[in-house]
Image 1 (cartoon, rainbow, N blue to C red):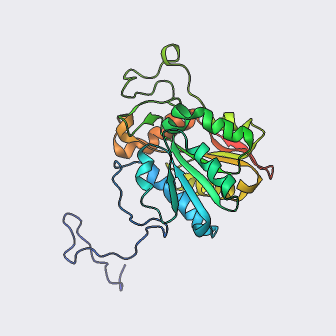
Image 2 (cartoon, rainbow, N blue to C red; image 1 turned 30 degrees about the vertical axis):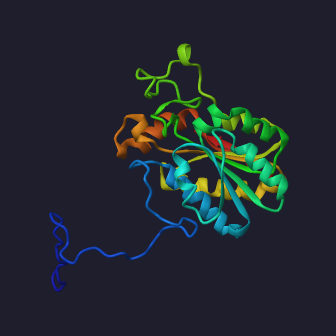
Image 3 (cartoon, rainbow, N blue to C red; image 1 turned 180 degrees about the vertical axis):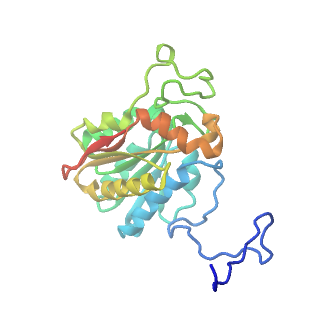
Length: 270
């Protein structure tokens, strides 16, 4: 337009001459070091961020104990500025039960993968829910045993390729996937049950609200949030395609939404 100075064109075929600078450190307050050693595109760091941010927002940093299972997420057990207890494979709900019963004023949570919770320790979480233990359990569900090579878990969806189902999970040979949140929602001791995901910004926001709600409701009974996470390495997909794969495969079976809420707000969406 006449009379207006043209904007300069910034070349993008080479790095800027001025160099890069840190404008802000976005590492959550309760994470000691922002860097991690998990695979590129892994969704577990995003899920962990939602959990620790919720703990901080509720003002429970000094009164929270996290019990970690065995899996890729265990890498965060020595990187959080809250008290952490390491459990044996699958046993985190029982350890958390002991912590809560001995120190009832604490906020107690578990962090487990689907292999740790739904395979190695399925009875642990189901019995904790049945007893109505006042703890919160988080299951980071990517449908593979990521830490031990990427083979099938109890939550792996039909048709999914893993290291030991290269042609896809088949119901006749391998059975059907367990939808753990749906099972726990049927148990009278469970007061809040939800399933979220971290594949999009919108889902991350919704999942964060689920985490906050679960921690707030803990004193009324057992609370549970399943979080669908990406694992492009274990899924044999490109890193950039992992969120799409999650939406089209895992979320199609493990539907997202609130399955049980003491306030009466619930509803599952596909």
